[in-house]
Image (cartoon, rainbow, N blue to C red):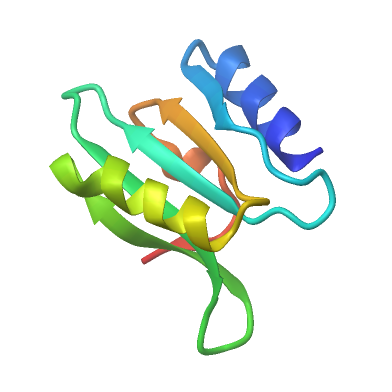
Amino acid sequence: MWVGALSRRVHAAGDFATVLHRGDDVAGSVVIVHRDRAGARRALARVVGADQTYEWRVGASGDSVDDWVARQGRYDPDLWVIELDTPDLARFIDETIV
């Protein structure tokens, strides 16, 4: 449900979102591949922070994004991978980006 809502919000703002890999509807973790207007890419994973709240942590950037995402998929076959092409990722996700 969260993935669909995120995709609708991004599209409504005139930006692009697509699901690169569909995970488990109930138990799947989420990785966001973010592409900014300059074409720079980074991959973010949702993790539990030191204060026990969720935050988005950058796992890879640049040329290493695809390899990092593939490794995450091998660890978690239920993983959702969503690519967003938007200039301001923070506006679409609730948690802090670290």
